Length: 228
Image 1 (cartoon, rainbow, N blue to C red):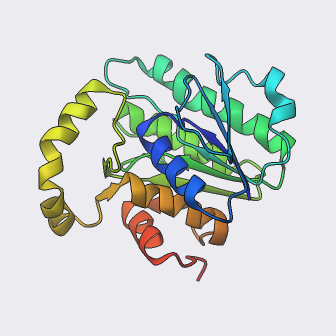
Image 2 (tube, rainbow, N blue to C red; image 1 turned 90 degrees about the horizontal axis):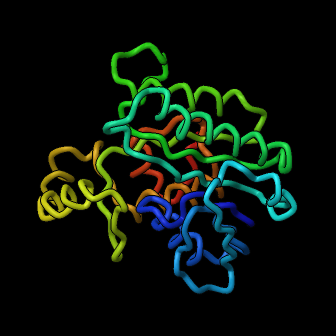
């Protein structure tokens, strides 16, 4: 299996990269992003450029892949809806359209977020934009497409968020994670579980195109198909 990974240097992307590189069924990982991961592995190839939506010159490198894990994302805090839409909806769809044209049998996995608004009409700006992005991806002619909606994500294995206030939040909440897991089992996960769930989706699929946090944890823990 050959996988393209967008956002491999971010918190979610690093969790996905760790699981991909450890799996014997994954032959090649192509990481595309604005910064290098710093990882050294014979399976890993990296393409670093500032504008990851401009793939015109990279198309020759993007052919022949079985799947894409799209883990790029930004916080909506302080952003206008138009700016957030440009870096969320517009960028994601631009990448997806290029990859689908080059690899029509590809599986596309998009990391969205818990609370995403599939109606696109709610009051929460980021949830509307994420919902529009999910809907557009699900309407594309990929062989398979999955939208993942994790809740609170605990970083493991030395992984840290690039966003400063997220790092502060994780430092404060981290010691309470066992209690959160007990009290709100359907709303919390880890970078390891999320990465493992993505890998299992590529291998086994799911009957649903949209997976909430509880589905993610179940898929990561069982390693079995959710097709039935």
